[in-house]
Length: 369
Ligand SMILES: *Cc1c(COP(=O)(O)O)cnc(C)c1O
Image (tube, rainbow, N blue to C red):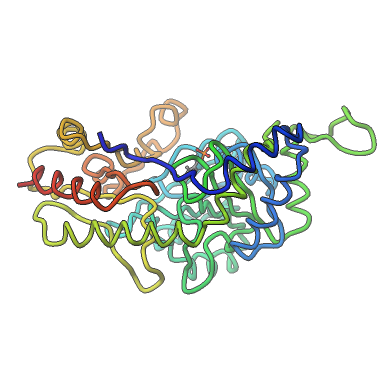
């Protein structure tokens, strides 16, 4: 079986983990946490980085630090992971979703403009699968209407938009270090910002909102979302190989493209657009409408051929947990609805070999023959 994701952990990971154990520094108080934050901030050109337990909680902290709450609307893509919408709902604010572009699968920026109301407070941008969202019109809308930007850059660490790093656009930007991300700490996440005040607020929220001068007295509710020294040790080792990892991702995408171009029945990822070269966080494909089975059946057949796959996201406006709360009652977003049913991604991890890519590509060609 070719797994859908296998991370690369053969650099200094073991050595730095041993240092944690030998020194006894295993909690969030250890020195690797600060080092990881500082090195990470440099990879995206930010003044501050705050390491947290995972990328989902990073979004909770971002929504809370920006003061979003009841009566506030936040615009985000429907085609994303629930980690984006859940913090908005938990904060008591209202998620407003837009459809995505059929070629890049990123949020449709014209629809963002159309959904702005006097209650809109923020736009949550999510870069999907490897190409960046068109940020220029988003920034212009934010300026014109006085909106905050939260940028979920979990899938595009190392990507740029017109030469500027993804993760440098939001008032707060967030990352994940789950094992299928470009840098992994097992579980982990990061908030980055240029604002001293927002960074300090995120640090407070990360640590149960303890505050000076009297520990155990609180003026707001935080979380324990601290990253451990063990996780950060992995992160530092991973960042040492960051450039190599990005080269591997792009080489993987190019090899899939070469093996699959011209295959009838499959929409492939766009290799590039005006703003960026695809970084192929995952290699996603969408079945053409004339293929007489859907993504679920395709993944079942590929599984039988020894190829591990995962489905595309399921749209937020079709989530039972939100519909049962009365959210998105009149929404229909046909592009996201279609690709959720016809899209899936194939093995895309950093440990994937050229031979494995060729095997997966042959299985895909077989599938749609
Ligand atoms: C992976 C991912 C997350 C969630 O990160 P976790 O660390 O798994 O909680 C959030 N947003 C996007 C876009 C992701 O790809």
